[in-house]
Length: 228
Image (cartoon, rainbow, N blue to C red; front, side, top):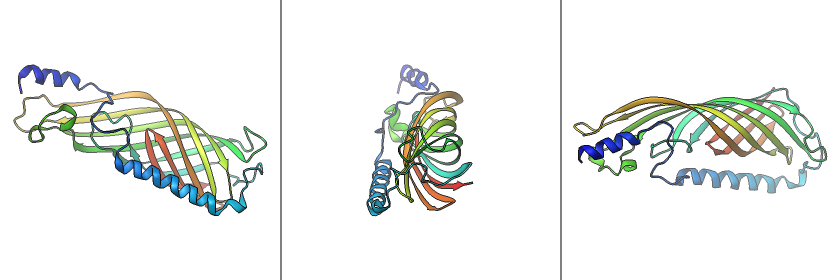
Protein backbone atom coordinates (compact mmCIF):
# COMPACT_ATOMS: atom_id res chain seq x y z
CA UNK A 1 0.00 0.00 0.00
CA UNK A 2 1.64 3.25 -1.12
CA UNK A 3 2.48 6.27 1.03
CA UNK A 4 -0.24 8.42 -0.54
CA UNK A 5 -2.96 5.96 0.51
CA UNK A 6 -1.42 5.78 3.96
CA UNK A 7 -1.66 9.56 4.31
CA UNK A 8 -5.25 9.40 3.06
CA UNK A 9 -6.17 6.82 5.67
CA UNK A 10 -4.48 8.87 8.38
CA UNK A 11 -6.60 11.89 7.42
CA UNK A 12 -9.78 9.84 7.78
CA UNK A 13 -9.08 9.28 11.48
CA UNK A 14 -10.99 12.32 12.67
CA UNK A 15 -12.59 12.25 16.11
CA UNK A 16 -16.36 12.03 16.27
CA UNK A 17 -16.94 10.28 12.95
CA UNK A 18 -19.71 7.71 12.85
CA UNK A 19 -19.36 6.05 9.46
CA UNK A 20 -18.44 2.39 9.50
CA UNK A 21 -18.89 -0.77 7.49
CA UNK A 22 -21.63 -2.39 9.56
CA UNK A 23 -25.38 -2.02 9.35
CA UNK A 24 -26.99 0.41 11.84
CA UNK A 25 -28.56 -2.46 13.84
CA UNK A 26 -26.52 -5.67 13.80
CA UNK A 27 -28.26 -9.02 14.14
CA UNK A 28 -27.66 -9.28 17.90
CA UNK A 29 -29.25 -5.91 18.63
CA UNK A 30 -32.08 -6.56 16.20
CA UNK A 31 -32.86 -9.75 18.12
CA UNK A 32 -32.78 -7.79 21.39
CA UNK A 33 -35.26 -5.27 20.00
CA UNK A 34 -37.61 -7.97 18.70
CA UNK A 35 -37.42 -9.84 22.01
CA UNK A 36 -38.22 -6.63 23.89
CA UNK A 37 -41.29 -6.04 21.71
CA UNK A 38 -42.45 -9.65 22.09
CA UNK A 39 -42.13 -9.63 25.88
CA UNK A 40 -44.01 -6.34 26.11
CA UNK A 41 -46.83 -7.57 23.87
CA UNK A 42 -47.17 -10.79 25.86
CA UNK A 43 -47.27 -8.93 29.16
CA UNK A 44 -49.91 -6.52 27.87
CA UNK A 45 -52.03 -9.40 26.59
CA UNK A 46 -51.92 -11.37 29.84
CA UNK A 47 -52.79 -8.35 32.01
CA UNK A 48 -55.41 -6.75 29.78
CA UNK A 49 -58.12 -7.52 32.33
CA UNK A 50 -56.41 -5.21 34.82
CA UNK A 51 -55.93 -2.25 32.51
CA UNK A 52 -55.46 1.06 34.33
CA UNK A 53 -54.61 3.43 31.49
CA UNK A 54 -57.98 5.17 31.95
CA UNK A 55 -57.50 5.54 35.72
CA UNK A 56 -55.46 8.72 36.29
CA UNK A 57 -53.03 8.46 39.17
CA UNK A 58 -53.23 4.64 39.53
CA UNK A 59 -49.49 4.00 39.55
CA UNK A 60 -46.68 3.68 42.14
CA UNK A 61 -45.97 6.82 44.15
CA UNK A 62 -42.29 7.62 44.52
CA UNK A 63 -39.99 10.60 45.00
CA UNK A 64 -37.08 9.23 42.96
CA UNK A 65 -36.41 6.25 40.69
CA UNK A 66 -32.89 4.77 40.85
CA UNK A 67 -32.00 2.53 37.91
CA UNK A 68 -28.67 0.70 37.50
CA UNK A 69 -28.40 -1.07 34.14
CA UNK A 70 -26.32 -2.89 31.57
CA UNK A 71 -26.10 -1.37 28.09
CA UNK A 72 -25.23 -2.06 24.47
CA UNK A 73 -24.19 1.04 22.49
CA UNK A 74 -24.72 0.90 18.73
CA UNK A 75 -24.88 4.56 17.66
CA UNK A 76 -22.01 7.09 17.49
CA UNK A 77 -19.52 4.20 17.56
CA UNK A 78 -16.95 5.81 15.20
CA UNK A 79 -15.09 3.16 13.21
CA UNK A 80 -15.59 0.23 15.56
CA UNK A 81 -17.13 -2.71 13.71
CA UNK A 82 -19.02 -4.04 16.73
CA UNK A 83 -21.22 -2.62 19.46
CA UNK A 84 -19.88 -1.41 22.79
CA UNK A 85 -20.78 -3.13 26.06
CA UNK A 86 -20.98 -1.38 29.40
CA UNK A 87 -22.91 -0.33 32.48
CA UNK A 88 -24.58 2.82 33.75
CA UNK A 89 -27.31 4.30 35.86
CA UNK A 90 -30.20 6.73 35.74
CA UNK A 91 -31.89 8.91 38.36
CA UNK A 92 -35.44 10.02 37.47
CA UNK A 93 -37.50 12.47 39.52
CA UNK A 94 -41.26 12.84 38.94
CA UNK A 95 -42.35 16.40 38.23
CA UNK A 96 -45.98 15.74 37.24
CA UNK A 97 -47.71 12.84 39.01
CA UNK A 98 -50.90 12.97 36.96
CA UNK A 99 -50.25 14.43 33.54
CA UNK A 100 -49.50 16.09 31.20
CA UNK A 101 -52.78 14.47 30.00
CA UNK A 102 -55.05 14.51 33.04
CA UNK A 103 -57.64 12.05 31.66
CA UNK A 104 -55.31 9.02 31.41
CA UNK A 105 -52.82 7.27 33.68
CA UNK A 106 -49.58 9.05 32.79
CA UNK A 107 -46.79 10.95 34.50
CA UNK A 108 -43.77 13.07 33.64
CA UNK A 109 -40.27 12.84 35.11
CA UNK A 110 -36.85 14.35 34.45
CA UNK A 111 -33.81 12.11 34.42
CA UNK A 112 -30.04 12.37 34.48
CA UNK A 113 -27.56 9.54 34.22
CA UNK A 114 -24.05 8.30 33.65
CA UNK A 115 -23.15 5.49 31.21
CA UNK A 116 -19.97 3.81 30.03
CA UNK A 117 -19.42 1.59 26.97
CA UNK A 118 -16.22 -0.20 26.02
CA UNK A 119 -15.20 -1.14 22.47
CA UNK A 120 -12.41 -3.58 21.71
CA UNK A 121 -12.37 -5.07 18.23
CA UNK A 122 -10.57 -5.20 14.91
CA UNK A 123 -11.58 -2.41 12.53
CA UNK A 124 -9.67 -3.39 9.40
CA UNK A 125 -12.88 -3.72 7.35
CA UNK A 126 -13.64 -0.02 7.77
CA UNK A 127 -10.50 0.89 5.83
CA UNK A 128 -10.70 -1.94 3.27
CA UNK A 129 -7.33 -3.15 4.55
CA UNK A 130 -6.58 -6.90 4.33
CA UNK A 131 -7.03 -8.54 7.71
CA UNK A 132 -3.35 -9.46 8.28
CA UNK A 133 -2.48 -5.74 8.08
CA UNK A 134 -5.54 -4.52 9.92
CA UNK A 135 -6.11 -2.16 12.78
CA UNK A 136 -7.08 -2.86 16.37
CA UNK A 137 -9.52 -0.28 17.70
CA UNK A 138 -10.07 0.21 21.43
CA UNK A 139 -12.38 2.91 22.75
CA UNK A 140 -14.25 4.00 25.86
CA UNK A 141 -17.37 6.15 25.58
CA UNK A 142 -18.79 8.03 28.55
CA UNK A 143 -22.30 9.52 28.48
CA UNK A 144 -24.12 12.00 30.70
CA UNK A 145 -27.74 12.06 29.45
CA UNK A 146 -30.41 14.54 30.55
CA UNK A 147 -33.94 13.67 29.44
CA UNK A 148 -37.64 14.26 29.90
CA UNK A 149 -39.40 10.94 30.56
CA UNK A 150 -43.10 10.54 29.73
CA UNK A 151 -44.62 7.47 31.41
CA UNK A 152 -47.80 5.61 30.45
CA UNK A 153 -49.12 3.18 33.10
CA UNK A 154 -51.19 0.52 31.31
CA UNK A 155 -51.64 -2.08 34.07
CA UNK A 156 -50.36 -2.66 37.61
CA UNK A 157 -47.42 -4.51 36.02
CA UNK A 158 -46.79 -2.97 32.60
CA UNK A 159 -45.93 0.62 31.82
CA UNK A 160 -44.03 2.24 28.97
CA UNK A 161 -42.10 5.45 28.53
CA UNK A 162 -40.49 7.71 25.97
CA UNK A 163 -37.39 9.79 26.69
CA UNK A 164 -36.19 12.81 24.75
CA UNK A 165 -33.22 15.00 25.54
CA UNK A 166 -29.50 15.35 24.98
CA UNK A 167 -26.29 13.81 26.29
CA UNK A 168 -22.68 14.83 26.67
CA UNK A 169 -20.54 12.15 25.07
CA UNK A 170 -16.82 11.89 25.85
CA UNK A 171 -14.91 9.26 23.89
CA UNK A 172 -11.27 8.22 24.09
CA UNK A 173 -9.83 5.84 21.52
CA UNK A 174 -6.67 4.08 20.42
CA UNK A 175 -6.08 2.75 16.92
CA UNK A 176 -3.19 0.30 17.00
CA UNK A 177 -1.49 -0.50 13.72
CA UNK A 178 -0.47 -4.00 12.73
CA UNK A 179 3.24 -4.77 13.25
CA UNK A 180 5.23 -3.51 10.30
CA UNK A 181 2.24 -1.73 8.79
CA UNK A 182 2.68 1.51 6.83
CA UNK A 183 0.20 3.62 8.84
CA UNK A 184 0.51 5.91 11.80
CA UNK A 185 -1.23 4.87 14.99
CA UNK A 186 -3.70 7.20 16.67
CA UNK A 187 -4.64 7.92 20.28
CA UNK A 188 -7.04 10.78 20.95
CA UNK A 189 -10.33 11.85 22.56
CA UNK A 190 -13.24 14.16 21.87
CA UNK A 191 -16.37 15.54 23.53
CA UNK A 192 -19.70 16.06 21.76
CA UNK A 193 -23.32 16.89 22.61
CA UNK A 194 -25.66 14.31 21.08
CA UNK A 195 -29.46 13.98 20.80
CA UNK A 196 -31.06 11.19 22.83
CA UNK A 197 -34.33 9.41 22.02
CA UNK A 198 -35.29 6.20 23.82
CA UNK A 199 -38.46 4.17 24.39
CA UNK A 200 -39.15 1.05 26.39
CA UNK A 201 -41.31 -0.96 28.77
CA UNK A 202 -41.15 -1.17 32.54
CA UNK A 203 -42.40 -4.25 34.43
CA UNK A 204 -43.36 -3.40 38.02
CA UNK A 205 -42.91 -6.50 40.17
CA UNK A 206 -43.47 -4.96 43.62
CA UNK A 207 -44.44 -1.55 44.97
CA UNK A 208 -40.77 -0.62 45.07
CA UNK A 209 -39.06 -2.52 42.22
CA UNK A 210 -39.40 -2.89 38.45
CA UNK A 211 -37.44 -4.31 35.52
CA UNK A 212 -36.76 -1.56 32.98
CA UNK A 213 -35.70 -1.84 29.33
CA UNK A 214 -35.06 0.93 26.82
CA UNK A 215 -34.03 1.01 23.18
CA UNK A 216 -33.17 3.86 20.83
CA UNK A 217 -30.39 6.32 20.17
CA UNK A 218 -27.64 5.72 21.23
CA UNK A 219 -28.08 2.40 23.06
CA UNK A 220 -30.16 -0.38 24.57
CA UNK A 221 -30.29 -0.83 28.35
CA UNK A 222 -31.60 -3.55 30.68
CA UNK A 223 -31.77 -2.86 34.38
CA UNK A 224 -33.73 -2.63 37.58
CA UNK A 225 -35.68 0.37 38.87
CA UNK A 226 -35.99 1.07 42.58
CA UNK A 227 -38.89 3.34 43.57
CA UNK A 228 -37.93 5.41 46.62
